[in-house]
Image (cartoon, rainbow, N blue to C red; front, side, top):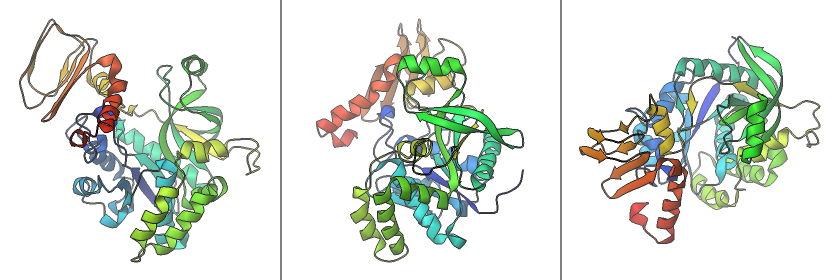
Length: 376
């Protein structure tokens, strides 16, 4: 496998709140800054996975002011100048655009390869994952390609975006790249079942690869107002004006995901690019992936057999099955309960049916509506 000539940088998106992991996940200590699975935090695991591919000098983190101190503490090998803070969340298109203008400004010739990766996903097979990442960078280096990693569905899930692929058009070693026909965001169950049965769809893992110049060209084409604002910001990078310009322009950037703004637009046959074939490619990634989107997902990841009880601390369970306990500081005794999530922190206790784990975020909204800032 040949090495791309352009320098490759990793941009880790670490600004989410992780509300479905309340009460452990809070504004200053969200999911990515917690040890959800394993001893290290999700962010630390992400950086560790990437270091064999990207040296610390080419790792960037996009976060926010609330979480910046925690990020700096957890990844000291990443330079402070590489930790970019959004003054307000404006979704992934803006966050990636912010990183892109910084990369363009500091890269020789104004261009580089860019891997955009979430901070809070679990990857069981790190070595295999790095091979796929290197292959994705190579495909991204060829022309103006936009590359996304796809996960083979294991069920008709309605909570993920889907990628429909065409024929394999490129090979990088044993790894194939497929042209993308279309993206579909979180389909209804009936459609998800059709996609799952067809075998022609992948889940969108939210991991993207492209040249900085390619991304900025697409941003200019599909989100011109955001592009113009970020170009104004680019002029002030490295100057005393930067912080003020960022605070002034960032809240006005369009609040939209990169999937909707760039990738879906790029695959439309009648799009303004007038290309006969899609510039978007998907690489299947069989790497033991999970986005660990809820406490129930943590249970499913850790349970080795049906009905097993999982606990972060010492416990005894009588006539009890299928529960997840996070109570590491206390001995826990459970009798006659089934399929529950129990998560304790010093100031809060969550009791939730395992099949209602997606609703934990509603508790956060309830607390916000009542001004309970101490619990957020």
